[in-house]
Length: 281
Image (cartoon, rainbow, N blue to C red; front, side, top):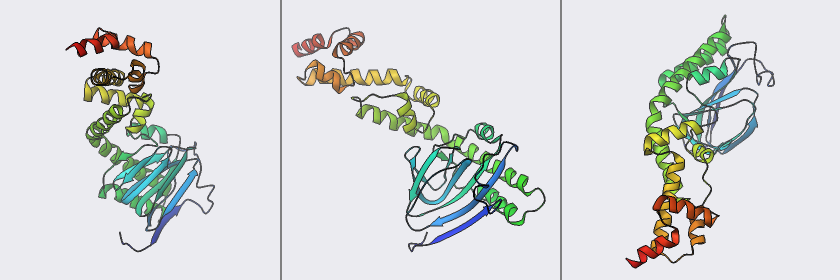
C-alpha cells in the first residue's frame, strides 16, 4: 500500500435503504444484503451492531478487533461477526472485502464449512476466493435474472474455500495456540485459570481447546494446571523460606489447607514435611 493517505470504496447494495440492507432474512435460504471492497490509508474506528452476519476478509495491512474479543487480523485472515453482537475494530492502514448476509440456512452453512463466528480464522490469500467475491459484485452491478441467488452461490463457494483453508491450517494453528496457552498458564499460576478464558485466548471453543490441549500435552488442561502449580510449589518450598500460605497464594490457592491436601496427594507429604525433608539433604 502507498504511504499517502487514501480511501477507496467499492460498495454494492440490494437497495438504497440502509435499514433494508441490514436485515435478518428468514424466508430465504441465503441472501447477500450488501458487499464491497474498501481500502484505507488513515486511522478508522468502527463500533456497531448488525442484524445480519458480517464477514471481513483482510487482503492487505492489519485490523485490530477490540470487541467481542481482542484479536489482530492480518492479510489472509477473516472474521464473521454474528447477528446482534456488538463489534468494534480499528486500523490505520488496511484493505478488505466485506459481506453482509443472512438467511435461515446461514448458520448451518457456516457450521458445515467449519467456520466459527466472532473469532479469527485463517483463509489465506486466495485468488480463487477473490474471484468468487468479484463475481458477487458483478451480480449486484448488472442485476441479471436470478442475480440474488447467483450472489448467494458465490458467497457459499467463498465460504467453502475459507473453511477448507482454515481446516488445513488448524493443526498448525492449534499447536501454536496451545503452546501460547501453556506459556500463559506457567506465567500466571497465581490467577484463577478457567477453560473459558484459555479457550478464548486460543481462538477455540472450550471443547475444541480441551481436545487440542490433550492432543498436544497428553493431559487435560485441569491436570496440566495442577501439575504446573505443584511443580512451582515444590520449587518455592525447596529454594525459599516463604510461609506455606504465601507459597499457596503464589500458585493460585487462597486456601492454604486445600493447597496442603493437593500437595500431599501429589508428593505424599505435607508442604511443611517436604520442606524439612529437602532441607535435611
